Image 1 (tube, rainbow, N blue to C red):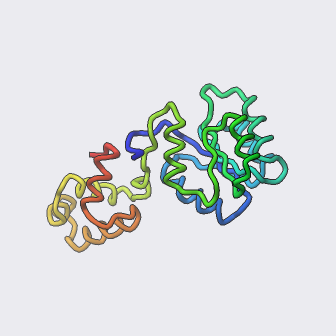
Image 2: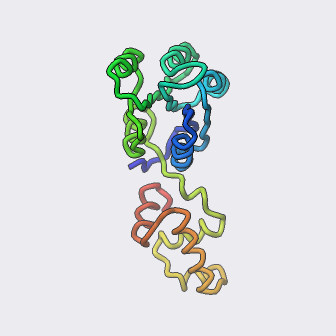
Image 3: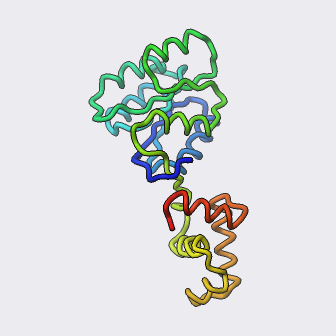
Length: 199
């Protein structure tokens, strides 16, 4: 899933609950090059007018300008390609759902947000290519080199020889890579590299 290079450059999250916002922002940084954030509809509208983010994830109930008013405003903007608009709400009230459908949003999700469902909705709603998992961007230059060598099937001893390092140093790099990229096995590392066209 999300295995080809993404054309998504930016996503805007509008959420006034700090805990919910932090969770979303932490996850979305893996998939987007730029993650924007606003706590209210007025600030969000300013960001949209200036930066035209490709994906917008908006709460319904928020200060200054509520979700429906906000969406009406962004529908007027000169996007070359329409943005993906995901509406989130803690309320399962039928009225909100009907309003969202009338506004032709791409998805309406009830909190707490299931991240896999959110990413799936973004991918399904876009005419662009699927999301690329950018976890490898967290790696240092040497960590990335070691990561790619591991993905190609090189043994730690071979990698150590290649870079004139001690095997213990390579093991340290491997541990850091696994920690940063949330891998548990070499098989996961190799599968990730193949899915994301890195090898």
